[in-house]
Amino acid sequence: MLRYRESREDALQLEFARRLSEQQAEQRRLDDLRGQADTAVTRLTDQLRGGPIDIGVVVEFIAHLDVLGGAIMHQTESVRAAETRSETQRVELVAAMQDRKVMDKLRERHDQDYAAWADGVEQRAVDDIVTARFAARKGQSVGAAT
Image (cartoon, rainbow, N blue to C red):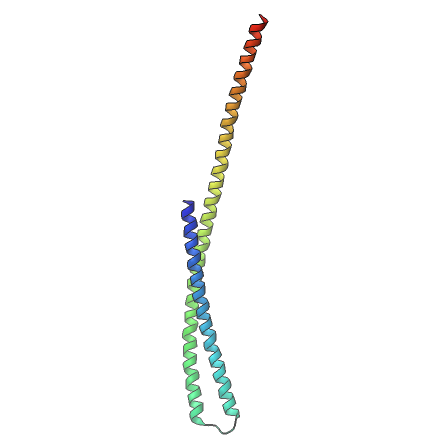
């Protein structure tokens, strides 16, 4: 039972690591999109400050920013979903770890109880042997005194 709990915990740790990796990848994509949007805004600002304004370029930048804004919103939702999956997996992993710890404690207690029982049996056996030897010696000394 303990081995099953340990293997289940190992599997959940691997799954949690995978989910966390997915979450980090989603976050990197979101950061990349935000970086692209910042770069586009900077380029548009530079274009507007640079002299004559070409309306076609401005429209193109604005359209590009709209597309990036939609992608950022979509990616933000993907990051939230990945965070939810990671958190769910983390909760499941913590529960499995607690189950294993409980089983460890139960096994430890059982081992202690068994050791105490075995010590008691051994002590009774030793007591019986000592009592038998004492009785045998007393019987010998009574027989020698008569």
